[in-house]
Length: 245
Ligand code: SF4
Image (cartoon, rainbow, N blue to C red; front, side, top):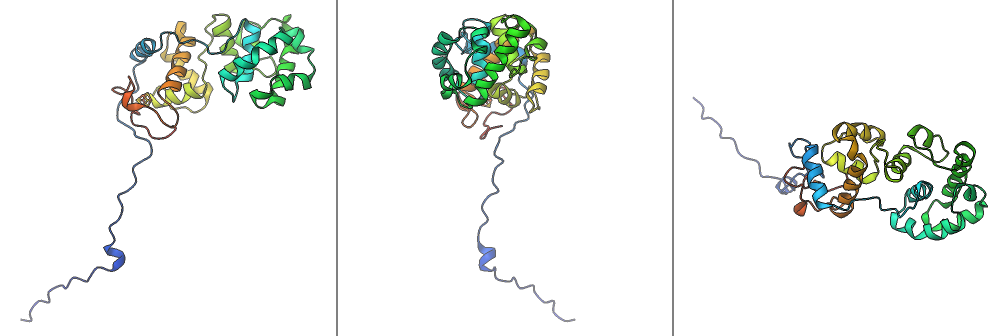
């Protein structure tokens, strides 16, 4: 019987000898935790941010409407700086409806997108004068009928100037945090709002938005969330998240 040939191991090529780097970890950590329970979340947020409120220094519904339009793609701090001079010149809808567009553009230049925003302010003021006697209306349907006014702006005005809980304001912070905490899987702000109003009692809709905005600004940043010191890190499904999500 012929002797069985022993298998001779081939020498590893230089290419094979190179140790492969470990597979990259997924960019965003995901745990198997359920969404944060709404009552617990609100309790902790309220404790952490007892003074949560609208960051725009408005004095009436018209000024809040104007300032919310200006705050798009801009900071509330900057809008608060521009507002005093703006309202000294054009204190109400009638005055602003008669403003020369180039003058209005100059006054709000630092708010960004100044041409588009000046046009929105002018058209919105004209609509207010023509349809509502110069006073911002008190329903969502009427507010969104004004040129330049969307659902988010309308919710801001109703909730903060009139104390009417018409919906949850979903800005970039509210959307991001709601997804991280598992409260929604939606990206579209209107769909996010539809999920949130089912989880939060109506009397807290406006407050809930302020609480999430404060947490988004102070802790749960888009790029660098402070998960290790966050007071929600024992319950948050996305604790350790590394990128905007
Ligand atoms: S900071 Fe981290 S732990 Fe806290 S809510 Fe945001 S993702 Fe969750």
